[in-house]
Length: 336
Image (cartoon, rainbow, N blue to C red; front, top):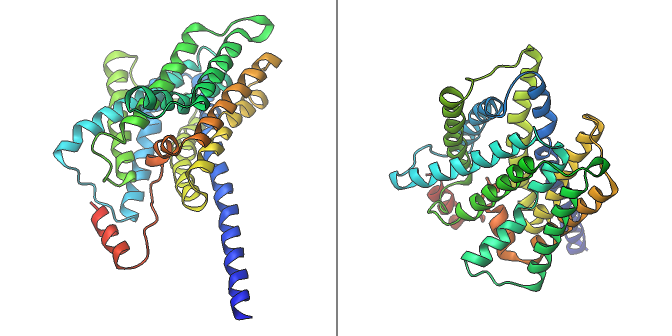
């Protein structure tokens, strides 16, 4: 009898953890999709993409530093790791910059959905350069993504096409992010704690916006109204810190593939706020294009373990360690 009681308690515990995992996975994707919600009002208040990202990264860096200390991680890095971290930081920052610039040329919901093709780009890069097996499912996903992009490009309101500049910017953002995801798993940072990698990636990326704003732009622009600082803080908090923490916990509870598939809520959230807050309009053709892109991403994530692992490897900041002496040894070895 005691055995069945314990079994029942264990099953209930696992079910509760599964529910928590799916809930946090959804929260992670939804908060990451809030970028336009806090960015567009700052544009209307006189800021540009470089200034918005300058403050977003600047405010996110201390949050990650506190998390590093809370996890008892060291800030120390080896000399050989500086160049890879710098390159990854520039790639990550370039992806953010081109996405934020695209908001000036197209609806934020469409831009966020076009960005969502990055898992398909990851699959293509791994196939072309790292001998990942090319399956019919991967080919189908690439074709579906291209069809979706074509439908969106030609399916604007009143039959108008999307801005070519905006389309190229957001696809460039997706490509930079895909290269970052693939590259960061192969540049000698595999044994560094993920939260430390993220901290230095944001730190070097912040340097890019500082240089661009001070030497190649109009300087660092401040919001005209004091309450707009709430949007800047929200950018550092919701799409950055909260999204990363929830992603980590979701991966631990439900695994990589379901967490990656829940990423579909990223563009869905951006579209929701675009329509309800900013008055954006979707045509039936847009809806078909969005569906093609989202379906292609879900299929490519579900179809390959290596691709899924690559997608979530460096969004898992607090890995679970096995209990016992071996786990303690691993924990100690990862502190630096």
